[in-house]
Amino acid sequence: MSRGRCNRNGDHVADLLITNARPYGEDATDLLVRDGVVTEIGNDLPAVEGVEVLDADGAVLLPGFVDLHTHLREPGGEESETVETGSRAAARGGYTAVFAMPNTDPVADTAVVVEHVRRRGEEVGLVDVHPVGAVTVGLEGVKMAELGTMAKSRAGVRMFSDDGRCVHDPVIMRRALEYASALDVVIAQHAEDHRLTVGAQAHEGVVASRLGLTGWPATAEETIVARDCALAREAGAKLHVCHVSSARTIEVLRAAKAQGVRVSAEVTPHHLLLTDAALSGYDPVHKVNPPLRTGEDTKAMRAALAEGVIDVVGTDHAPHAAQYKDTEWAAARPGMLGLETALSVVVHTMVEPGLLDWRGVARVLSERPAEIAGLPDQGRPIAVGEPATFALVDPDAVWTVRGAALASRASNTPFEGMRLPAAVAATVLRGRVTARSGAVAPIGAARNGSVAEGKAQV
Image (tube, one colour):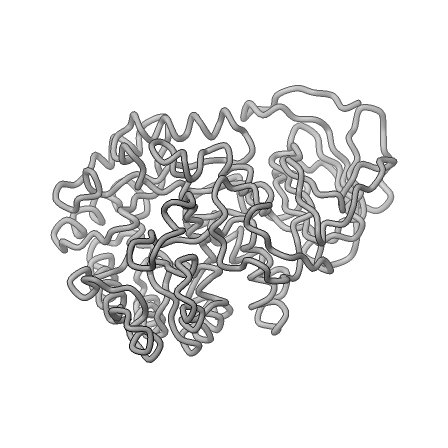
C-alpha cells in the first residue's frame, strides 16, 4: 500500500520508486520520489514498505510534456471536448501541462471565465491546465480585453491569444504587446491576414487547383508574422507564433531572432507529417487552419524544429463532435486531434531520421515550452531535488491509431489507421501517476498486454 497525503501544490501524492528507467534514453537507473520530488537517483535502490514501485522496463524517461496550444472546448463546447476528457487525453499523451485556448462560449476574456477553466483543471487533476486569455473582447478584434485583470487573477494567466482569429488591427496588436511587456506575459498570434483568405479552403497550389478548392496563400501567414515581429521588437515584448506552416515564415523568424526579437514559434505534429496531398479524398478530417501545405513546407518545418528556429511542437489539439466534421468539405470545421499522437509523430518525423535525439525531444516537447510560458515547475531536469514530473516512453512500441479508442470525446484524428512508432507508457505529475499502460506495471503485478496495441489507463 502507498502512503497518501497532499504536497504543497495540493496534489494527493504517494512515495514512488521508478526502476529501470533510462533518463533521456541513456543508462538505466532508479529514481526515488518523496512528496512529489526526486530525492535519490541510483542503481538498485531498495523498495521499502509504503512506496509504490513502477518498473519502467527500460522505457525512456523524459520531463513531462507541455502543450502551449490545446483546445479543451469547455465552457460551451462540451459536445466536442471537456476539461476532463481533454486532460485524460493529455495525460495519455505524456503531457503534464496544457494551455487551453480561449475560443470557448463564453470566450475566456474575463477573470471569471479563466478562473473557471483553471478551477476545472484542478478538480480533474490529471494535468496542470493553464487558461489562455483572449487578447480582444469576444475575439472580435475591436477592443482589447482586460489582460492585467486576467494576469493578476487566481488563474494567473501567462499567455494571451485570439487563436482561431488573427489580431489583425496593428494598433490593437501593438497595444497588446506593450501591455504584455509590462505584465511579462506572452502574446500568441494566429498569423492569418483574413483579407487574403476569404473563402479559402486549402493551400494555394496545385492540389487546390485540381480539387477546385479556393486557395489559401502562404503569404497570409508570412506577412502577419513579419509585421508582428517588428511590433514586438519595438515593444520589447514576448511574441509567440502559433502553428507555423509556411517555409517562408521560417525565414522571417530566423531574421527576427538574429535581430534579438523575443519571438518563439510552434509547429504542429500534422504540419510535420502531412501534406496537402491528403486532401485528394475530400475527407474533412484533413481540413485544418492553417491548411496542410506542400512537401517542401513539411521538410522545412522539420529542419527548422531541429535547428531551433521553430522552438516547440504545439499540438493545436482541436476536437470536434461528429456533426461538425462528418459533412461536406466547405461546411466542416477546421481542426484535428493531437494530444495522444504528438509524441509518436515527433519520433517518426524527427527521431527516426536523426534530426533529434531524446534530449532534443525533451527540448521541443517539454523544456522550451515551459520556458516560453514561464512555468517554474515544468520542463525541469531529471535530477535530485527536481519535481517528479515525467513522461515514460516505450521507444520500441508500434501502435495503430484508432480515433474511437482515443481518450478525447471526439475522434477526428488525421492519423486514423496509421501505424506509428513509440508510445507513452506512463505519465507522472509531481510524483503521482496520472496515466499508465500495460507496459509499465507495479512490480509483482501481472502485465495486461503491450502498449503497442493497447490503451493507456488513467
